[in-house]
Image (cartoon, rainbow, N blue to C red; front, side):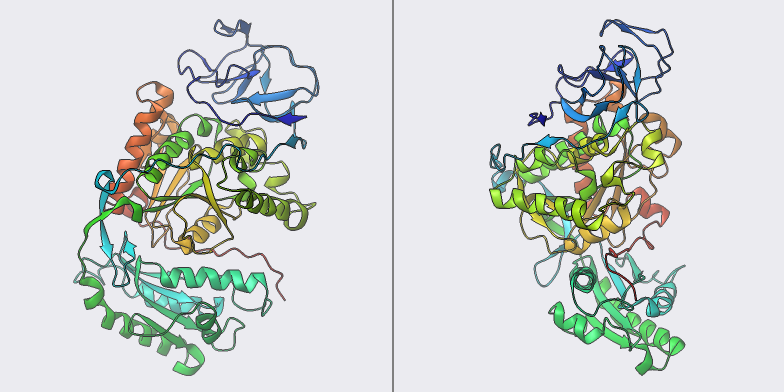
Length: 521
């Protein structure tokens, strides 16, 4: 059987009453509030047979065993047994299995009608000498290998707690330590991926200067890293090898001295008006719930449609979390070749990387996702894919590759947020927009991270960590379009220097996590 739905239509939502109908052809509705057993649902002509928690699904008619379960008119699974109308549907009675999907590459492609330059939005960015535009102004201390992690943290720690008071335009000195760099293949994709990631951070405009610190005997040698990434040393990129400098203490002292020397020049910046085309947003979701696909994700998608019309770039990632709805992206691809790139990544995940393993792409989502009303990866992917908006898919990138194409693009990555966001930042993202239903406390230095709550109760409970409440859509106090515009305007203000909630809390200094895909030995 095949899934022929090509677009997800939000106009059919009725955000009133106890349930939300998402598409006329759906055989389920979503509980907007807690529904007790025996509650009549007049809009659907059924009575609930079970307790239905907020965000969970309720059958609107009798569904036979093996029949498709449709949400937004997209298949999210199959009835595990005969299911009477009014039954609560979740992982216990929705079967996960493969089904045919028509990729129809590029058949729905429509170019973006971009605004003329005179009408494009602007923000206050930091223009670097090479023309790149930064949203923040950090100094980065980058390790080649885990063996230099203590040193890079020691250098950065020296400038905490008032160490930068004399340099108000410097956002921080950040340690970028990781677990890799040795005990791995000397060549091949694992090492290439690590070097792409490190090189992407070293070139990132949000890092005004970078110190690269190695041990000296690691497989990921500083010289090989710089050569591979075509990076040259100079005043803004300096290297330290612990075995040559004289050990832990002496390398920390040398690094601290180098940062002190750099601070006056790094502090000497000003923000200026630049077009929104310089904004690249990395799209993330974590701790998702069933409301993600109804509020925060489509609202963020609407904001990305606006950004793309203004010449900017949106990076959707987390390959396991588009699985099952990838055909809704390939049909919007700019070409058959772009669509095939996406499917090649899907096949690699299914047939090579995760084959036979208990992973998300093979069906089971996290306990938090399940508690939030998501039955399986198909249902989670349905919401996750909405973050990219409705425009054409312009390109597909491997993890941490430089993103050079404007518009809506995709980057292959795991569904684990710190790893995925690390790849996006390495690719050039200068803002992260992160939707969450259960509540995710995430930061992403040297890039500001915005948290978008899917529902009002969670926003109120975790308001110190949440930047915007998309639950207002569910409450009926804001439309999807109004929320999307608000998100776009928040992105502009954040790119201009306004602090996100995670920045105010100091979150983001430990979330640099390159993807570890190779064997260790």
